[in-house]
Every structure is written in structure tokens, then in C-alpha cells.
Amino acid sequence: MEKRELLYSGKAKSVYTTDDPDYMVLEFRNDTSAFDGKKVEQLDRKGMVNNKFNAFIMSQLAAAGIPTHFERQLSDIESLVKRLDMIPLECVVRNIAAGSLCRRLGVEEGIDLLPPTFELFLKNDALGDPMVNEYHARSFGWVEEKDLERMKELTFRVNDVLKQLFLDGGLLLVDYKLEFGLFRGEVVLGDEFSPDGCRLWDKDSREKLDKDRFRQGLGGVVEAYEEVGRRIGVQF
Image (cartoon, rainbow, N blue to C red; front, side):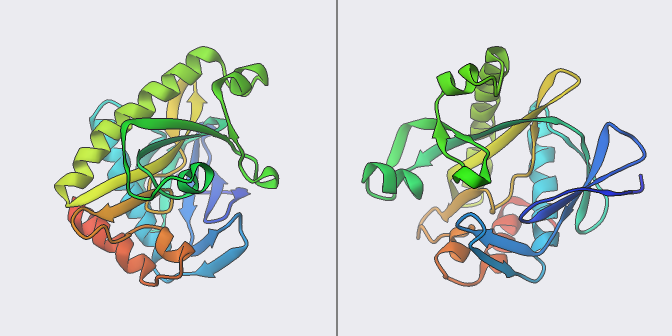
């Protein structure tokens, strides 16, 4: 299914139309950004690594009965996906305290969160993707109540599947963000799942093997992504 024209170019991915209005081509680029685009670099192989990583994760989730937009991998850096009517919210689950949670609440990094927390953020770069609550989401019409409940249900089902998958690879799934959209009226997982959008630590050493390596200038970003992938069975 040949890609035609550029529909959207984000911080790390480009989206192209196809000859079928229900499907798009997702192109993973080597661009890497942090701090709302204030820090940007090109990292060799990153587009390929994230595309293959995402394809593997989406296939695992689909096998567990979670509806996703992923159809198939087209090339090293491209995948075919369903065209969703995206809901402008990010769903974040935190299993271990890290990142902005520690800054907001003054808690120590590394504390296990029992039960895991669920947070909503409005997707708005100009506002810095502010945290919102479920009342905001409903009152401003960003999402219908039934769809929000479905998003929460699917987000925690993803947690059940992926926590174990990563644990089997000697990794801790610290936190992650998910985006959803509607496809023919059904809530479907969209965007991507890669170390760009989650935190993953080695279970024993708690070494960071995710995008925090880029944010914190630790180096070896793509190598860490590849290490994570190999541990869970991704073929690069």
C-alpha cells in the first residue's frame, strides 16, 4: 500500500496517507527530542529500532486481545496503521515513582506504587501537555465518558501484559504513556510503544534503559533501546 502525501510530521515520526482512507503509513525518524522540543538530536538507527520495537509490542498486545491501530511492518522504518480519530489525551500509568511525579509531589525516585497510579495529560505542546483530571476531560468535551472508561480499562490491561513481558527480560516497567483514538466508533490504542514513551530499568541494577538516557545526557540511547528489545525478543 503505497504512501502518498505527508499528512503530519511530529517530533520523531511522520504520517502519510495511502490509497485507502482508513489506513496510513507511520514513518519512524532518527529525530530525538526532549523538554518540549528544546533538546533535539539525530541518533543513528533510532527510527529502525523504534519501528521494530513498536511492531513487536503491538503484536504482543493484539495477541492479548487489546485493539491497536497497528496492521503490519512495511520496512525498517515504516508501518501500516489504521487511521484513527485521535482523542487529545495521554493516559499515563506509573508503577514506580520517577520523573515528573517526583518533581510534583517531592517523593523519592524508585518507590513502588501500589496500586499503580493513573494520570491524564492534555496533548497540547503550547501548554506543555498539562495534567488534567477526568472531570476536565468530560466537561471540555475531549472524550465521551464511555470512551474514557474504555481507555482506562485498556491502559491497565496493557500494564498487566507488559509488566510481565519486561519482567521476563529482567526489566522493570516504571511508567508509560498511551494514546487512543476511535476507529469506526471503537476505542483503539494508537501512536507507538517504545522506550521513547516509557521508562524501563534493569531489574537488579536499576540502570535506566529508556529515553531518560537522552534527557539526562547518559549516552548510549539507541544501544539501550536495542538491549531492551533483545531481552524481550525483538529481532533487529
